[in-house]
Image (tube, rainbow, N blue to C red; front, side):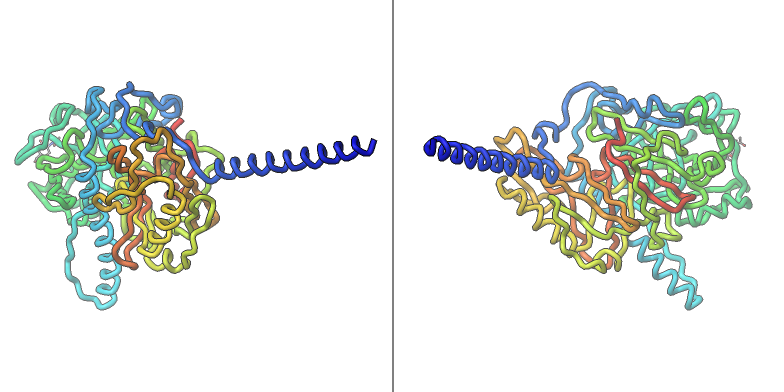
Length: 475
Ligand SMILES: *[C@@H]1O[C@H](CO)[C@@H](O)[C@H](O)[C@H]1NC(C)=O
């Protein structure tokens, strides 16, 4: 009897211990799943699979498919994905970031200059970069489908036009010929639209036989020069706009090879969202696909926007520029909030850009992110830095990789968890790097770049003065 009771006690104790142990194991496993992503290593690299179309873009009104410029889904590559030269991509990315920073600091200097009422014309190019996403838009009558890079960091929409008086770079689709479109109009150089060019492009419009000429340069010797014109734009069969201003570029050069031009989604009066404001109320959303064999979407208006979108106000730091400003207030790595004083973010401010590849952080914020990330990745051997990325791992021999989740907190309480593709930048299996870089100057704005935006639903509500985020925007 007493033996039995003892046995029973032991069994009970054993059971409690076991179940407690089990619970702790489960909890720990669960916590690890909450705080990290485990992904197949191969999923980080391009596959040769055929293109998978976003059902979101196929189903939603006013929605266009978004493709990687070099991906299998792109009209420009006819199904053959070309692996980009990553070092070149990052070199151009740095040039774009430099031009963004110089535009923002020019804005600050302009304020000082204005208050001293001196007038020194300052010119600076913007750089186009190379991590670009493409949509196809119909221009003219009959409509001519053209692949344009969309850019939240600039305003003027333009395409190459015949006649190419000096030079046109090579593009995949036939170059637009205004003389074969019945809806094309030249714009006079005395018009207010011509007057808006200086804020939209950084260069005042000029006159050629009373027609308005524009010129926009993008650093790295990229530029487009031609006539400011009005045309019919066809996004989808139900979304057709007569008389939108655009640049008909007769002299174009630079890094645009393959695409026909650019769709300007910035905040200036001449941008596409501003010109279509009566229809879409300056609202658009997109999802950038996680790989070159998927499409995402670019949707105008409020159609299809998820209820789970969390919004943050557009910050005033970028007022008077094309950019959409954000206020970052914190970063979490693997469930742990980084100890970063709030002034580290608030002093330089931040912005979101569809054309910057790698997010840039203030030096102190980047240092904190890097050390937290390294600590959580200690089981993977480190390897050498490459270009602007200094935290790289050699994943040779691993099938899967477990990476800490990274989340950004923005003012107004929006917390945005990055997708698993928004954390690492894969050069090769033996060199996979943390996809963030530090600014060199504490006063340079942080930039939320397109690697980090992948698979998120990103909503730009220009009229409401806010930007929003939700997970899984491409499906
Ligand atoms: C627009 O201006 C150009 C250059 O002056 C001219 O060649 C073209 O015929 C004009 N097009 C229209 C539709 O007026």
